[in-house]
Amino acid sequence: MSDHTKLVRAGRGDPSLQGTVNPPVHRASTLLFERAEDLYNDTPKRHYGTQGMVVHDSLREAFCQLEQAKSVVLTHSGLSACTLPLLAICSAGDHLLLSDNIYGPTRKFCDEHLVRFGVETEYFDPRIGSELATQIKDNTKAIFMESPGSLTMELTDIPAIVALAKPKNIWTLVDNTWAAGWFLKPITMGVDFSIQAATKYPCGHADVLMGMIATGSSKASKLLKAYDRASGNFVAPDDAWLVLRGMRTMGTRLEHQQKSTLQIATWLQKRPEVSKVLHPALTSHPDHQIWKRDFTGSSGLFSFVLSPMSEQKVLNFVNAFNLFGIGFSWGGYESLIVHCDPQIERTCGSWQENNPLIRLSIGLEDPDDLIADLQQAFALLSP
Image (cartoon, rainbow, N blue to C red; front, side):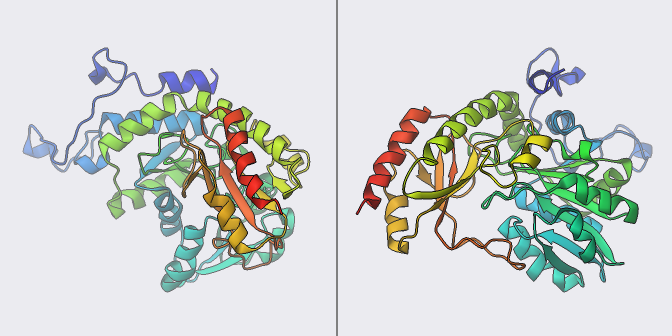
């Protein structure tokens, strides 16, 4: 079955649904037992609300089918989905390799908090490919990638990194939020943990915070589930229900956003105020061949570099929009814009651009209306 069909049907086989299309929402902490003898038995029966209820099972099943995963753990935010597997994997004395284009809060967590537990974090150029072998040490425990980077849009050669990691029993993780498990399937490429901010495309409506970690093997599943249960991680049933509802239409939204985004990105390539457009599906992108090999499409997030101008002009440009909202996050039905330069941090010099970087998230508005909004904002940059 196609992913469209899978997401419509996933998680709808539980008898407790009693013929309804959507699962019930159980707001539960205490779960009652019929006999005292069952309290401590290791049975499939749920023991406490933190294990989730039917709606959590349905959502996990939908993500499992989408990512072609062994199992899925839900977390309360995209950031917690990035940090939880690192805490499950790493111990004092371990070495972690982190892509230099990684999500900023993940970088901050490693640099300021994981280091307190005696874990060394080293960064690598996201385009390094098999040359990463020179940075692998005897105590390297994990390699964490983000492809593409959500600001600067570099792609990583995931199969090449996996080929280095597998023989050495190094865990591999990919932040797969941009492709949403729809356009890229890291687990089918041998990755151990495929991570998403379900806040973005799976939810799709800018009203829920959630993360998702899909595992690619029984070993990864066992490790992550053990830490998940010990940590007290839990997501609210109402949030799980909303994300599940969003996933039913995610493919349709993504395909519409893909089409609109490519139309807008192509239009931006012709603007004199733009020095380059950073979208992996464009042939002008330096990693276009990797995108063509590994991805089945592209989502609604991309960036472009402006021609040289003052910071005040950049701020005036961003402030001039009527349809694009100014705000972090992305993947919802609404279009967003941010100027990226204050966020960009690099350790190994993988980003050399000096001109202003703008990121767009394209929503469900008519692309012609969004182009008109861009056009009137560009008018402010004219001499």
